[in-house]
Length: 85
Image (cartoon, rainbow, N blue to C red):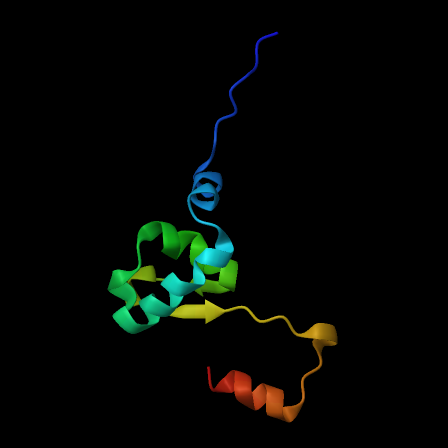
């Protein structure tokens, strides 16, 4: 019986190349080295594993950080801490 080769999309290839748990070190390095040091694959896929999304226009180097808030409830201290990020 012949097997059909499954075509791998870009995101699947990127996940296979580097485990999400192993990419935190790169994220910390990019924070020091600046926006220009971030490869396209990391910018478009890997940073999203940590809730970081580029804002438009992407070239300006601004990010949005997605944060989970259980039950939609924060204390004033927690909200203040988020504001410092």
